[in-house]
Image (cartoon, rainbow, N blue to C red; front, side, top):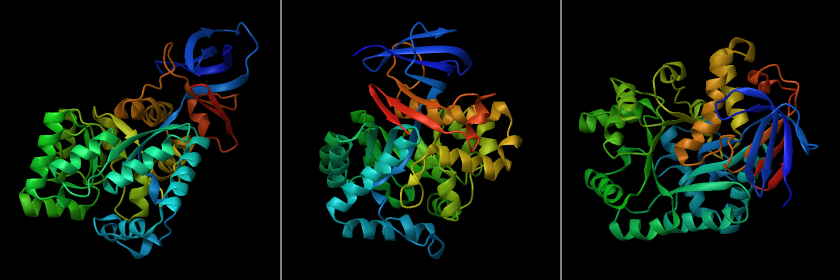
Length: 369
């Protein structure tokens, strides 16, 4: 395939905006230069790394519930309504829902997802079949129906890791098995942790330890939510260098509160963003950023350029690094970029309601928006 050229303002590998151009061939970035491009560009604008949606439950998409009527446990707990409805849902409806959830994210700049796929082997096989038909890539963290050695061994063929609910949902014996399997087999694990105050209280009552303390004992790749850290939870996370995937929109809608964003961002903790259950939210990270700015900072004008830059970095290259994707704009990497309308004064102006994503590029594929 011929060389494609994009020009404008580019957010480079060091996250600095430069005036220049980018050339890609066969889906790989071949050259990044300053100044005028050597050939006519196929597209001009603000060029940034793509969004990475670091935590989803894509198959939930078709489920429609009035969230205000249910507690978090009633909605998504081990015996919650979500799981009941997923069991009753037909295969084709699940496939259709996953496809729509992926398409929604891709149209808003998401080139990669990390999905916690319930349903054991069947659930993971289903997602693997669907993702073959889509341009965006999905990292699959599966969940066994039973914590047994045979079940986990079979599941390993279809997954990138284990995506588990709270440690509160497992017996001490099951947690020992999980730790053993992950340690002996280089099997990645990630968990929900401290999503609610109730979960933290239950963990301390039952074990004398917080959910965070117990989750970290399992050696996770990352933790999801961390809405209600207590004691020295955040300091422990920082000490162990465990990334956190924040899902504030979901936390707000399920009524569990909001994570302490400023506190977490003040520490040396890798942060990514996810949209959580597709039955609750769109899979757009741009929507997640918009929510964060409005809830934590009132509006775009009140968030500093540096704080927004850190948030945008978390939603793109940091989320990518956490789930094992390199989407930095750098020579030799796959072309995972977004092209926004140009005439930007600074990176923060991406959130201008009148500014649109013109196109999303993953490898050789261009999605005009």
